Image 1 (tube, rainbow, N blue to C red):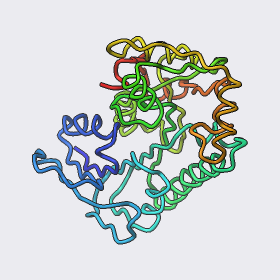
Image 2 (cartoon, rainbow, N blue to C red; image 1 turned 180 degrees about the vertical axis):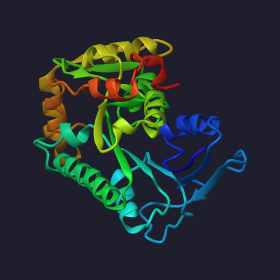
Image 3 (cartoon, rainbow, N blue to C red; image 1 turned 90 degrees about the vertical axis):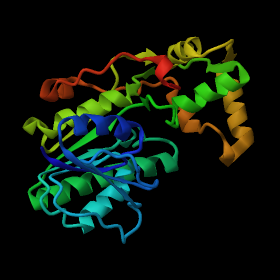
Length: 284
């Protein structure tokens, strides 16, 4: 019967988390940049606002605060707002905080540093206020057709009926469904063992990136032809486009590197049990 304050409620994870929380007969305050819904049930209150706006205010008194959007913006809001009555804060970060920390690309290193700084800010503020905190670091998120990784690839393939498959793309990937992240957030709310911890969260299946692309191709409607692309061709294209490259040199390097998560701690502490990769859910 807790009162929840959810940032990023209209995103992939938020849209699947809201029904779970409402089923608990909880009262939910949802904040989003999009106009509030007009058909919301009585226990759901929408607020229109942007975390980047220093003037953003929402009613205090929420016992559980969940950030599903940009963690850096949320961490700064959390630092400047008193959050009176809160006993729990859960933040969704990214495995990029770890995987891009030593990237050869300065922009990617900056992303990792910003994520880590945001995680640390949430932890520091929460500890100072006596609030239990938990940070979740998902891998490749999919499930609503709006992610910036797999969904654009699938849309390209569906439109042009070809799917480029880079040669040597043997690095393991562990795509995680947004629905499993929503379940993880709900489980963490009532699990005392998760307080003060950062959890990597991957999906239930580890796939070579080229095999993942083949699975994705098989799930698309119509005829989609696989197009093997030599690594050299990718590097030449990247050099020709210079700073406007569609794929950075660091990203090309990671094609052969594993980007996976150890789900062991999450399984032990709150029963995390993600599904295997469902290619058909990339563009539902």
